[in-house]
Image (cartoon, rainbow, N blue to C red; front, top):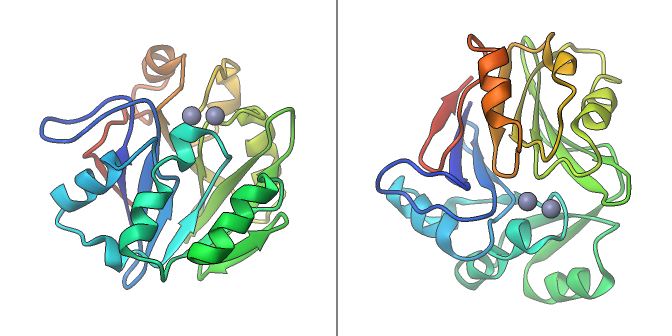
Length: 217
Ligand SMILES: [Zn+2]
Ligand SMILES: [Zn+2]
């Protein structure tokens, strides 16, 4: 299983960057997109990886902020077959527009969307859907901005029987670094304000994040 960073506030040479987040979860035969950045930039980066947007089958959306959903319409223009796993707490108009343009699947909380791939919600003043990937040795959590609080997301993910392996995505203003101690993999991306202190605190297991990066699990 691989995760390719398609869009981030930072980028490797040759890849586009901007305020937003998008990553591609690649299983043997299935490609699942998590968030879509703020515009078409993530699709340019997808092509730089040599991947055709038609190869994407599923899209998971975290929360309806433009830096996470702004790019979706550009994918629908070239691939209307995608199944978009849209949380029930998204605005009604957003869900109605999706229903007429692609396959909208409304999610209501913890749910399996593919083999070893789950979604769940953390509810707060801004609610978010996050992704849980069941690696054989533990759970990898993918977050959008983690507005509800990364500690709440990790607590929700810890309800499941397997241990938490790691977390990748935007952590927003999360600063309770002791909550990350038991993880084996930490990739603070996008809006994480404490990026450098997280990487300094966990030099062996924290990785920087940028468009163009590939993480193999
Ligand atoms: Zn946000
Ligand atoms: Zn964001």
